[in-house]
Length: 109
Image (cartoon, rainbow, N blue to C red; front, side, top):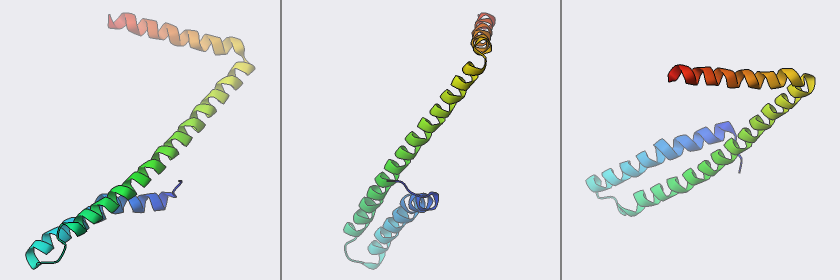
């Protein structure tokens, strides 16, 4: 399930702020004013919040997984293009990185 940014932000705000506050408000007021179902209604609200939170979490996971794959593929394509343009410079770049890493390691010791 993919959500638009606006829908995601609204659901996130609802789950994290509105529904817990509503459950707490009803629970507190039911004790003061004798409203019916003082435990059932807040529990139901929190179960709904949990369900929506799980749906939003699944959407977030899928979004991050898709974006990571696109970034990794983009980096890989850039590296392949750099290698095809100049294989020696491409290899030398990695060797320079290895030499710099070795120098930094020796300095730390």
